[in-house]
Amino acid sequence: IENKMQCKLCLKDKKLLKKSHIIPDFMYQELYDDKHKIIKFSPKNPDKFSQLPTGEYDSNILCESCDNGIIGKLEDYASKVLYGGNFPIQEQPKFTSYRNPQGIEYTFVENMRYTDFKLFLLSILWRSSISNREFFENISLGSYEEELRLMILKKDAKDIEDFPCIILTMRNDVDWTKGVHVKPVCKKESLGNRYSFVISGTVYMFYTPIYYGPKELRDFYITKTNETKILHTPEGQGEEYLKTMFGFTN
Image 1 (cartoon, one colour):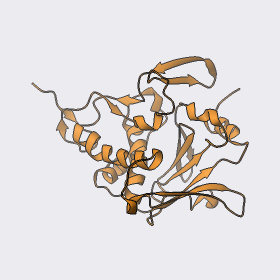
Image 2 (image 1 turned 90 degrees about the vertical axis):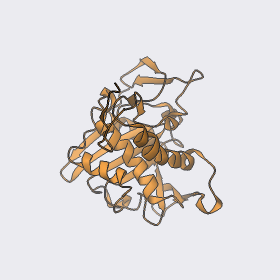
Image 3 (image 1 turned 120 degrees about the vertical axis):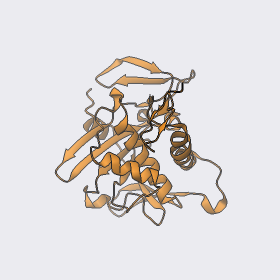
């Protein structure tokens, strides 16, 4: 008799997968060693490390059609955007580097599909919340977990200030951050929560339920005109920023 359990996305009783990635494998591609293992370490004890054969994943949370179909399609699109892939000419994202009058450097991305890319990002946040893995113990969306589930299931990315994500890269400033794999963190504030992930030298900051951060960053999340700006840490400040955000110690 085939054992069936409730899929956490479609809520139907189905056979669930033994391995569903919480953070997709392609985002770890620069962390793997020559044997396709991730080097995982604690910043507080850098001499002690462990090797993972693959990224963070959980079992019995998603059915195949939700994992490979709904979420897999979002991942496929995001992978091509972030790491290069074949697009028809009219769908090809365009990346341009800028420095604004205040000296802030960023990468301006044009022709990035609002719904697909935003829901891809939110799928990481949502999966982290439903996961039982200790690595994601700081990520708990409460009532917003159901709201994100419906957004992903119905392909509804809502308005630009609903659950936005600001992307900040440290890769140009601190090369070693490409190899950092550390627990995501949550900062609770009166207006909502900010969940921060660092994945291969890039920080993803999610605001729930709406954006409440500095007004200077209001135009740094993806818009319905299919544009976004990826913020760069100021030169020489990336390492200090990372230590502050994630509680690193020397």
